[in-house]
Image (cartoon, rainbow, N blue to C red; front, side, top):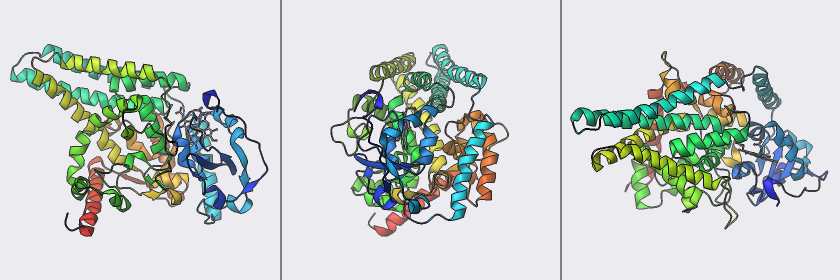
Length: 472
Ligand code: HEM
């Protein structure tokens, strides 16, 4: 394989393939996928510029995920992988070989046309003024936190309380950096993807302490297959965001993985452990970021499934490491302004816990407790994204929208991840109408009600576990 993700062109053949043949190729080193009824062999293409998210489509239809992720220039790279096309019968079937009704065929055509309609309405275009405001106001949170710590540097109760408030404010700064970085790396903000990536390094590595490569690899995979269980240990088609064992099980099949005494203890009371775990989430993400870039351990996800010894690339490894180092320098620099070691430690703890709770509560609201699928039986792109996702109802003051970083419109974000946050409310009305027209459940609820749904779901799974293993 050559540089830049290119590889020698395959011979374009006129062969036709049935789904029964395509679905045999589901693992990274033996991966076929279908785009607009053409069959592509991407086996072992670990140099794919988007990383191994490509293998989430192995053995399946990638028409819509391809459209979701790529810029206009990517289609010209397709031909080199083409090995033929789907046979006539397969064109009107799901990859499960169930026939598609005429209604389903029209529905798929409809949602693809809807995407073009939204483009025509200019809803994929970002507002520089909006994002300049978001970036400056977010930076303001960190500057305010640092200023409070520098000003209230004594040992009175007032000083201590002010510094604790500053720590919580910094936690919210980290959360807001997370949202900004998310939008930048989904290419909502900058048309030029290289510019976006470098701005992403500032908000991700430097400001927030998360590695961009680690995050993109994990997050793009989540977008391709939300709430999906992989077809097997060698396949790359599961959602890493529900890969939360040995701590939390989001579906009954996951209970099989509770095979240690610790995991059994956790899962049987997971509804009680949910918030304590969320409080530690940022610490875990910081650790995974460093472990991913330096390839410190397997849990960081740098190794490539089905290709022992191969590592996923980190495009600007030294820059990523340097900026992660600078993150800790400024963060611990503020902590060091505290009069005592205990004060500095509390500052770091409070800011981490606040950020973990603030980010992970929103993540949980987005998908947890919604439908979960097996990869080999996932529905079409639109139904997969809508039925695995929950929206959060707005409040009159715009707090929910600010706090959730636009992910209150999680359904619309999942359907069209490159649409900027400030346009999602317009997309929402159109999406709701489209779902109603095609009889697809579109779920939205309040922030508190949604969190209760998540906890109820965890409890239901825990109860099932305790029922099956009464000794727990
Ligand atoms: C034969 C099939 C494919 C080819 C030739 C291909 C090619 C490319 C190329 C040239 C890029 C860099 C340019 C760009 O970002 O638009 C890219 C990026 C990417 N691709 Fe693919 N791709 C394929 C399939 C897929 C599939 C099936 C997925 C997801 C399931 C995927 C996900 C991505 C992602 C997430 C990126 C990174 C976009 C970013 O910068 O955020 N690709 N791909």
